[in-house]
Structure formats: C-alpha cells, structure tokens
Image (cartoon, rainbow, N blue to C red; front, top):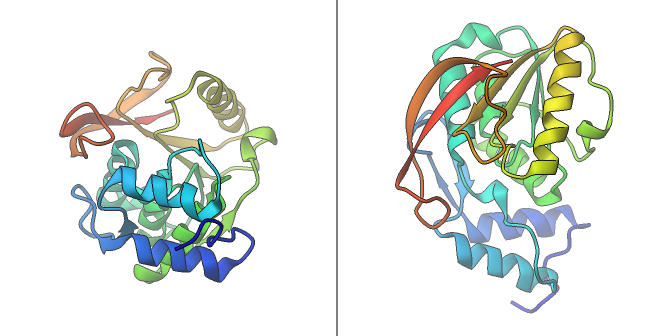
Length: 223
C-alpha cells in the first residue's frame, strides 16, 4: 500500500485499516471478550506511519490489550453489580476492552472516550464483535469538567507525567461530583501512590515487545 492510503477523515478507510492489520482474538485475562488486536507491535506502528504518510506518531495503543485495561475488565466481569444499570464512562478507551466489559455486565449507557480517531473506530468494531452497544467520543474530556454521577473507568493512563497529573485532577473533581472511579494500572512510572484503595490484583500476560516482562502484576483500584 502507498503512503497516505489511510484517510482518518474516511471512516471506511479506518475500518479497513483495522481489519486488515489485526486479528480478532481474546486477551489472555479476559477470554469473554473479542478484540481486533495486532499480533506484533512494530509492524502495525510502522504501517500506521506509512499509510498516513507521517513519522514519529504515537504508538497505536488501541491495537493492544494493555495490562490495566485487562485487569479492570476482568474485575468488572467478575463483579457485574459495579456497572449494572449505571451510566459508564471509559476514559482513554483504546481498544474499548473496559467499555465492552461494562456493557456486557448490564450498564445502561457506555461512552468510550479517546482522542485517537482510529481507537474510536476500533472501539466500534470491537463492540460489534461482542454484540454490545456503546457510544464513542473524540473529545478530550480531561479538558472539561466531569459530568454528573456515573461510573468512570480508567485503564493504564499513568505512563506520562503531564497526562497523569491531568487524570488525577479529573478524578478528584469527578469524585466530588458523585462519580465512582475504577482504575486498572500496573503502577506505571507516574501512578499516584497512596491515593486509591486496592480492590484486586492480577498477574496479566502481556507481550515482551511492549513491556519489560511476559506478565505484569496489575491491580484494580477505587478512587
């Protein structure tokens, strides 16, 4: 394929790119869910740059089942009362794994939020593959006041200092407005120690291409 073949303004082009460069598989910790995932990290990263005709793009986070997302999805499926009948927001949704887990366990409405347009298309494809319904938004919700009471899911968003600071501030305001926040994270570099209550812990299989081990000890926390 030639450079520039992927057109982010063309939804069908984005869907084609996802389906042609991923496989529909289940993440190790959450076999109940099917996702369009990349078999290897470098090829799909390079393919994204080639097709957009750009370099130094962020990694295609949507193409992998990160430890935090797997952990919080596992927790939600094992504790279906968390999301049943609730309005749910999945921040930094990526592949949509946590949003799909919320929908599977009976949430009234689920919004998957991500600033990556390809991630939003992946969320929609993955929701379809799991026969669940969810909405998507590309709005940077961290730049806006949190909505009213809801369940907020956050998976693996503490990998950069500036992003982590914004997430912590958002969590504090959302909690003050009555929301309940669940966080899946393997305590990455900027995870805020001592702020959250640990609910569960999992040993999550991951890929050595992306992580420093074949599995990551990952906890689910409540703010």
